[in-house]
Each structure stands twice: as C-alpha cells, then as structure tokens.
Image (cartoon, rainbow over all chains, first blue to last red; front, side, top):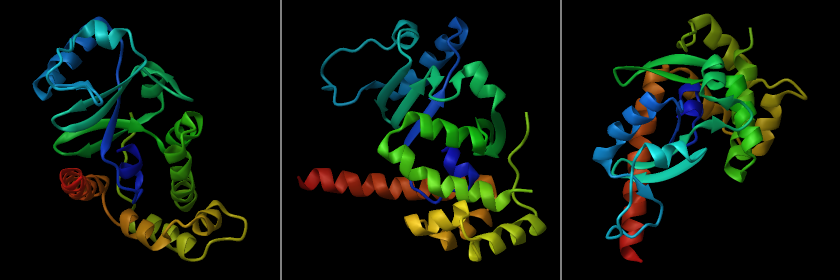
Length: 136
Length: 74
C-alpha cells in the first residue's frame, strides 16, 4: 500500500505491515488478526495451527493468508531495519478514517531495492519517477 | 511525523510538466522506456493519498474476484 499512497498505479493484492516486537504490541497484533484466521500460505484448513505471540516473536517475516487476503508481517524491513528505524523514515497518511504510518518515498525505494525480488525491482522505476516529478 | 498530503496545484503543475516532458537522462525518461505509463501516473498524482487508497481497494477486489473465478474454473 505504501507505493499506492505515494501515487503508484500498480495494483497490489497483499498488505505488508511492519510491527514492533515489544511483547504488548505482539499481543495486540495477535488479537487484532485472530478473527480473520491467519494461517500459513497453502496450509490445509483442517490442520490445526497456533496463532500466538510466540509465532510472531520467532519470525522476522511472516506471510499469512487471512480472510481479508494475504498479509506479510515484518519485524524488520530490508534496507531499513526494525520497527523503530522504519518509524523514523515514515510519514502519516489520512485514509480509511485512520491515520496510517507508511515509509516515505526514498525509504520505500531503498526497501524495494534491498528486498531485491523481481516484483520489488519492477516497481522502482515508477517510484523513482514519482520522486523526481515531485522534487522541490 | 510528517504527513503525506495531496499535491498543491502548483506542485501538481510542476510534476505534470516533468512527466509530460521527461528530461534526457532523467529517472522519468528511464521509467518511460521501462514501460511505466506516465499518463496513469499523472492521473494518480491528481488524487489525494486517501483517494489513491480507495481506488486501489476497488482494483484489488476486482483482481481477487478474477483470481477466484480462475481458481474455480481450474
């Protein structure tokens, strides 16, 4: 969604959320997502799966299929760092009746470059042209 | 924390000029050669960040619905 807020026209069907690993936050995150039945991608629905703070705490990146769609939970963002470092390079967007923090455009580009997946690298030219078009 | 705001009319005009007339060697020119639609980008930049999110939500739902149909047909 970060690219979308900044003006990207690319369609995305998954959501990346960077979270703090502080215990109280993990507890809140687990509770917030529990009603939407997070489970590993491709996991047979009849197999039991534990969704708790331990699951979150032990992973740097966790991809979960939920009733809302695919959500990636990141304790660290490639090229940026942990939640505190991500927060330091973030801005706020007023949308969906919420105030949502998202990476600023230079940080988003750095993160995409560091992630290095084909889909991340493919997004960079558009983002760089947005950055260049808006330069003061 | 800074806020992501919609572009002012002056900022939008500058952005549109740069996107319609990419400078040689610029990232905008490179993006155009890569296949990025600069016209679509201009459309997006005319929206507020919230409007961009709402538009994306509609597009994502359409993609999900199409994927659902494709999966059911397999």
